[in-house]
Image (cartoon, rainbow, N blue to C red):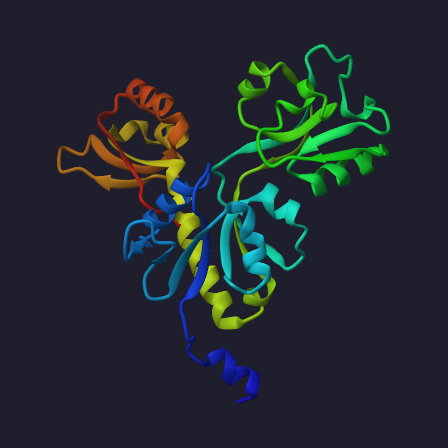
Length: 302
């Protein structure tokens, strides 16, 4: 056995650290997702910034914007933060493991309502841009061939154009209502951001740690996949099975179970899309189905 193999097979001296947001748009959903995956945070005391996530993982709670730095510096191996914050950090040592899908927003360019600008490409050189994402903003406008002046802000950027601090803003937008209330109009989207499970490159290059990260990603993904599906059971006429298969194809076809009657009925079980449950039930009823039952799924593996 080589020295590298011995190091990879040696037990870890501490649990793998996962940096989680301590507040903000991603914090509650991240904790909920980990709990649904079987990793419930166990705090020693209220307001503790460290929690156990079972024998293999330990959560540390920090600002979302600091998580890329914690990973890059080796203070944590894994983290959950927004794609926008990973991009703004510019850290090449960060590897994306899984798109978690929640916390969806977009990083947008916005101008005052009365501005004649309709696209970001119309902005002249020297435009002052208020943003807390200077690296992304500068890279975006460089791609347009426009030299800008960054006006860094750490709070609400929406007020900056009205105070003469900047001509436009680059900021996160969810529904756009905050922009409208503050007399601003979105003209371009730089990127769409969601929460991501990320890891340091050093962590994924260590085989035992990589295995643990892969197992964690599989558990989280099974929860996310299950949230989009429902388990449907129904008694259907045997002579309608061909039509039933078209209505509930399932993952690899419905499971058909014999019903203890005269043979005219069978029980059909299938996984269906959550957002099409009501159409599926309506179609099954048209085919004469009875005893339709729909339940949630905790986890779903491909």
